Amino acid sequence: MECNLFWYLLTILKIDFDQNKELIQRYQVKGCTTLVFLKDGVEMDRLQGLQQKPVILRKLEELLK
Image (cartoon, rainbow, N blue to C red; front, side):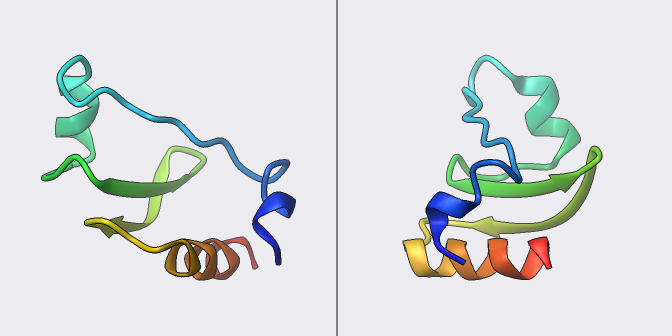
């Protein structure tokens, strides 16, 4: 699945670490390079640290199956 095909299946949000302390605490984000994958408000998985595009695409494919 190409990345341009994901757009209609998900929403991507960039959260300001300093201005969203409640969300950071709720999802126990330890670093500012954290991707949290949610479905209906429930965490399905996460990636921490800087990730390359192929790693993110594989994770999205896995979670969207």
